[in-house]
Length: 114
Length: 115
Image (cartoon, rainbow over all chains, first blue to last red):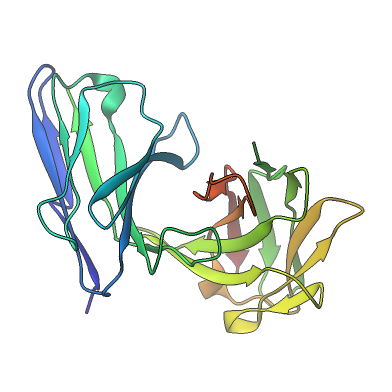
């Protein structure tokens, strides 16, 4: 059974709309992350959280807002969608917010913006 | 800041052949190094990691990688590939100090194994 659940797996949105990507992890981890993967760029770090606190944000646009309602949840809200936002968004987690820890990834949410 | 270069975007080998996927890193000291694999329509899974000690580290499914400080490299190897090894392989590096703990990933190498 998947230990990191991402929903939805696939979604199509129109330009200007808003979507929320859901991520739940059942590994008991304290740190969670969002990465983005697109054809134009390699796997790109977006955010990291530890104990529901934002630790690092490498996303230039405020249109991307992570939301952590529980320790094992880290959703990603994207507003004013643009075609360039089309990508697969991966949620990941690790035992602690440290450099030595292995990251565990979900299966991704593939977003297409028309 | 650390960075990773995977010079080969795509590698094609025949089943049973040996494999080397190249990875070069840039960092001021010895970093933490990882190899991840991504099978079609799945998330990334870690194959192996290196922190210190023996420069050759063993991973899952017969994979190993060798760290070279002089060459700033962390190449992935396998003695005999199977068609099921076809996937995208990512090298990643984490800093060992400075608080910038997120792993930085390379662009990935797509491995195609012909039966």
